[in-house]
Image (cartoon, rainbow, N blue to C red; front, top):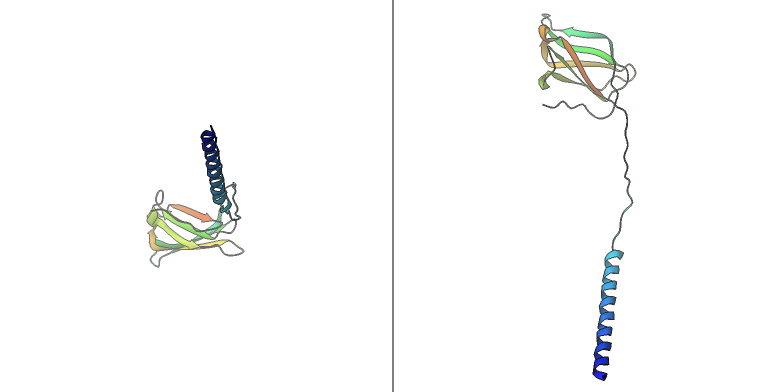
Length: 138
């Protein structure tokens, strides 16, 4: 009977030691975690359009056959504006980067890299953003 009690005592001590080692290991893993301060959140804002006001001015080539540039004003400031003159819905090649609006008048002048034939200058399309840049996908 004394051998049995000794084995139980040894088994009990081993079990306690294993529990202590496991507990210390778990503490070591949790104690080493650090999380730096950070910010997270979600929000929403309305996306509204601009109103293009006139008069809208067109500059023609010397021979009067093409439109070289167009000028107009927006109803508020824009960090970047693009414009297209086209016969139908504009394609990537129709768009010209116009830059930002003027500070007080919100005036914009867009010069087309390739002058637009009068017959194709039927629709003026304008893209503008209040922050960032306008990107027209190809």
